[in-house]
Length: 425
Image (cartoon, rainbow, N blue to C red; front, side, top):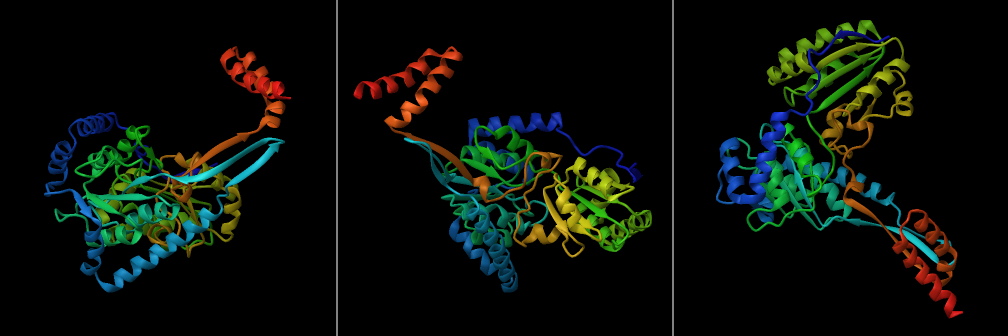
């Protein structure tokens, strides 16, 4: 039976009614009043009132001259990794056309959405990788128009490295505006920028709630809220690496969640000590400390089977496996955003550019969805083509089912085709 050596004093944040109310008011205001409303909230929340919120493509490209050449090369390599994996994923999505009965052809096509609003959080940290993850992949899917979006950093617009990442990723232009009003600007349009068909990307609770409320008006990728890490460790694990990885993820924000599921009491107890030491030594330690104290847990399990059960129940965004046989868990775990196998595979590899995507499900959503991938931007559209011989085979079935459902108009539509075929003989 699982034992908690450290438990969280409260559950990770659920939907806050006050956040719901605030976001609803912002979205309604922006939908009705457009740029004026966006400007009002930008000034209020970010102290940001530029002449224009739109950043043209040439300014995104020019940002490459504002950053260190070595950093440019690293951004380009990360983009290549992400693009390469996305293109491989795209190749797995097959278009088909089959003749299921004589005279009946049915098929499917994969058609990209026409436009995407790619949001990247950047108000606290210049999250370069987020700008890559949300632009490279839709471009690989064939999306025609990508509108990147990020909040201003320290009152100076989008960080130059993020702007260059947007350019490398294939963004056509960008908006420098954050939060729920930024998502609203993407969904409803602003200045001379048309609304998009889909908004994607991670963010704080206001961004996640804005996506939830906008769904239907536009498509969304998934609800990605405050970040989570879960580390599975056994007696072979290095407590120092476990502590390092958990603390590193907690610095994202005070609502970040860190779970350790351990089958060795010795490793668990040593890791708890090292987490405290790591937090104390970290420049972002104040944030990590609050996150750990509020949302951190150390769970001691009796077996690998119990550890796997606990991990699947928590359905974490990032799951690291520090065990003697990491692939044992690959075969058994079913609920996770992305899996990091072995202690040489830390979360930052996936988050910053190894090739997989870091926009991942949180708050238990990994029970029913994976993370952002090229398929999110492709609509699987079906079609059918029937000839007279096909009508002879299928129309009687359609008529019978429609009549059983008491829908005579549907039955008549099929019967008309059947009558025409029979009268032509």
